[in-house]
Amino acid sequence: MKIGIIGSGVVAQTLGAKLIEMGHDVVVGTRDPKKLDDKKKMAGSLAEWLARVGNKGRVVSFPEAAAHGDLLINATSGEISVDALKLAGADKVGNKVLIDTSNALDFSKGMPPRSLATQDYCVAEQIQSAFPNLRVVKSLNTVGAPVMVNPQGLAGGGHTIFVSGNDKPARAAVGELLTAFGWTDILDLGDLSTARGPEMYMAMWLRLWGATGTVAVNIKVVR
Amino acid sequence: MKIGIIGSGVVAQTLGAKLIEMGHDVVVGTRDPKKLDDKKKMAGSLAEWLARVGNKGRVVSFPEAAAHGDLLINATSGEISVDALKLAGADKVGNKVLIDTSNALDFSKGMPPRSLATQDYCVAEQIQSAFPNLRVVKSLNTVGAPVMVNPQGLAGGGHTIFVSGNDKPARAAVGELLTAFGWTDILDLGDLSTARGPEMYMAMWLRLWGATGTVAVNIKVVR
Image (tube, rainbow over all chains, first blue to last red):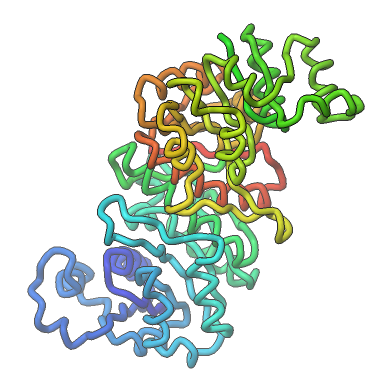
C-alpha cells in the first residue's frame, strides 16, 4: 500500500521503518525537505533514517506525502497538526483514511510536559472538523514509538491499543494494520468523540513514565 | 480505626460498608443529616444503607464526620469537593490523612459526562491548596465503587490502583488500606501533582465504560 506520513520525527521514522519492512511504499513528509541535504547523518536525523531503511523510503514535502499515500498518518505534534495538514493540502486529497497518532503537549514549563488535551481540545476532532472529507482514525497515541510497532516487545504483548473514528470501515482497516504490527487487544471505542479518552489519557501515561522510569509502558484493559 | 467519610453517595456507602465489615468505626457525613429522617428506605438511600450495615455505621453532619475520623475520605463529587470540605471544617482537623476519591464531572451536556480535569484543574491539588495541613492522597478515583472494595471481583484482580500525595508515609498508609481491600498492584505515582494523571484518566475510563458496556472495568499497567 502507498502510505504517506506527515511529520518526520521519531514516530514517523519508527512507523515508516516498520511499514517499509512490511513491504509498503512509504514516504515521509517534512516541512522543508531541502534542508535534508544540509544535515549530517546524526542519530535521529532523516538522513540517518534513510540510510537505515536502505533508501527504500523517501523523504518528500508535506503536500507530496499527502498526495502519495492511499493511507495517511499524522505523526506531527498535536499542537501543530492542523497547521501541518493545511500545509500538506489535506483538503485536496479526498476521503483518504488518516491515522492520527498525535498528542498535544506543552514542554514550555519543564518536564514532564503538560498534556493540553481537554474535553474541548481534542486534536483528532480538530483535524476532522478542518478536513471533513478525511476519514480520521485516532490510534497509537497512547504508547511510545517502539511499542507502537512492536507490542510483543513489551511483556510479550496482550496489552491494549485503541481506535476511534466516525467511519467504521476505516476503524476496521486501521485495526488490520494494528494486527499486522502484532496488536492482539484492539479496543474499538466508537466515534471520533471517543478520542478525547485516549488524548486525555496521555496525562496518565506521562505519570506512568515518571513512576516506572520507562517509556516501555502500556495498559491492558481488564474487563 | 475511626474513619470519617465526607459525602453520602454510592462511593461513600460502598467504602463505608466495606470498612465497617473490616471492623472500623465509620461515620458517613452528609450535608443535612436531618433530612435522613424524611427519606424512605429506598434503594441507595442512607436509611437503606444504615439498615444494610446493621446500624453499625452512623450518618452525621459534615463537621462531625471530619472531627470523628482519624482517617478522612472525600467521597463528594469533585466539582464541589472544596466547598464540601469547607463546610466540614477541614481546616480545623489538623494534619489528618484525607483520601480523595473524587472526579470532577459535568453531566449538564448529556451522557457520557464530561471530565473537567485538566492540567490546571486537579481536585486533589485544589483540596491540598485549600487545606495545607491535610495530608491529601489521591486514590481510587480510577475505578467504579464496587471495584474499589473488591478488585478480585473483576477478572480475579491483579489490575492496578494508583496513589499520589506529597506525604510519603500517608501514601504508604493508604497503600496498606488498599492491600486490605485486596489490591495487589498499587502504583505509587509520587507527589500530588501526579494526581493530574488519574484525574484526566477519568475521560478514558468513561470511554472504556462506553465501549465495554460495563463499569466493571479497570486497567493493568504493563511494564
